[in-house]
Amino acid sequence: MILYSTPTSPYGRKVKIAARIFGLMDRIQIEPCDPWTEGDILRQTNPLGKMPALVLDNGQAVYDSGVILDYFDTLLGEPQLFPKERRLAVQVTHALINGMMDAGILIAYERLRRPGEFCYEPWIDHQRGKIERGLASLVKDAPNPRVADAASISLACALGYFDWRKQLDWRKDYPALVGWLETD
Image 1 (cartoon, helix red, strand yellow):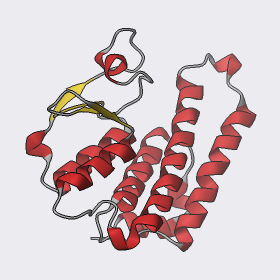
Image 2 (cartoon, rainbow, N blue to C red):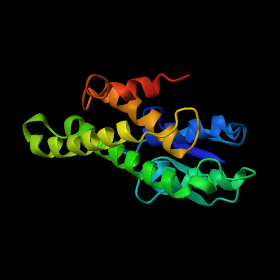
Image 3 (cartoon, one colour):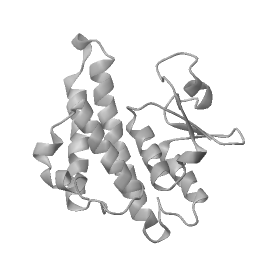
C-alpha cells in the first residue's frame, strides 16, 4: 500500500502511528505529497486534495484518516481502533477530535496562507472556540491514554499539532490533558 501524507499533517500522523502500533507499517510505503501543488499525486489520488490518502494494492484509493483507520481494523484479527464493544463512543470522541484538528488547521491556514491584512480575527476566534470547547469536554471524558484506539491516537496527534502551530496555549489552560499526554 502507498500512503500519501506529510510529516506535519496530524491526520497523516495518526494513520502512521496506528499502522506502527498494530504492525502494519511493513505493508505501507509512505510517499510525500503537497496539497497546494496543482497536479500533485495527492490530487490525483483524492479529488479533494486532502491528506492522507492510502492506495491499496488493488489500486483503490482510500481517503479520510478515519476511513483509513476503519480499513486498518479490517486487516486486524478483530477491530481495535474502533473496538466493537466501544465503537460508538470511540467514533464520537474521534469525530470531536477531528473537528478540533479541522479548526486548528483552519486557523493555521488563515494565518499562513492569507495575507496578514486580510486575516479575519473573528473567524480565528470562532475556530479557537471549537478547540477550547472540545478540550474542555475531553478534560471531563478523555479516552484512556493506555488504550491505543482511534480516539486516543487522534487526541495525542491533535495536542501535538496544537503545540506546533500554537493555535492556543492548551497546556496552560487544560493541565489535565498535559497529564493525559504524559501518561506512560
